[in-house]
Amino acid sequence: MSAALKSILVVILVLFMDQLLKILIKTSMTMGQEIHVIGDWFLIHFTENNGMAFGKIFLSIFRILAVIGISYYLRYMIMQKAHHGMIIALSLILAGAIGNIIDSLFYGMIFSDSWGQVASLFPEGGGYSSFLHGRVVDMLYFPVIRGNWPAWIPWIGGNQLIFFRPVFNIADSSITIGVFIVLIFQKRFFHSGEKPEGDQSTI
Image (tube, rainbow, N blue to C red; front, side, top):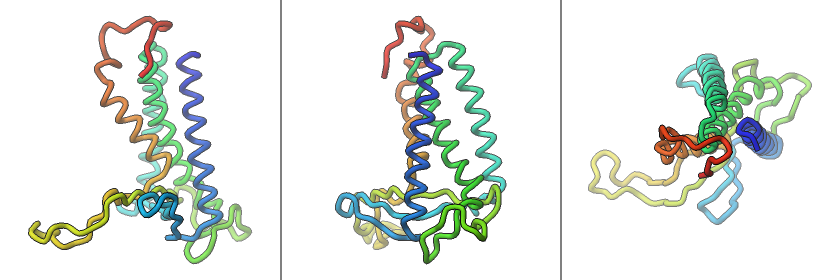
């Protein structure tokens, strides 16, 4: 299988899983609702990230520019017959970036709000916001460790400790996995003595 085809399949698969889960969450859960999947350390916790700290429009434009840049670099690496592991890693990063962009661009227009109600897809009165103002859907929550910080630690002593606290989605996971693959295998990917196209090893 060619590197280009592998890249396309990775992007399509990640986008399909990411958007399918997000749509299921939006159309079956209300904001803040939780489902315990495995005990108290793996939960489906519905929340949304609106990116207000950076400005919704700025963040959406930044994501679009990032996708364009990653796409060009991925195309370049494919043409340069880079290691297939590098191609897969970049494809994971690209797919994750596109997955969150879809939320930012379109979810505000195609979904009703989720506060106190289950959102509707393509509501009659229009969505909860406009183009570029959608909120990214997050749901994967792994509070593996729960407790309190030791009292002797300055400033945070006695406060609640939860690890891992962030709630994320499949797109976020795809980006993180892609970045870790590049960091861990960078010497293999960027080694000057690359093997020919037909003799490349996998990760």
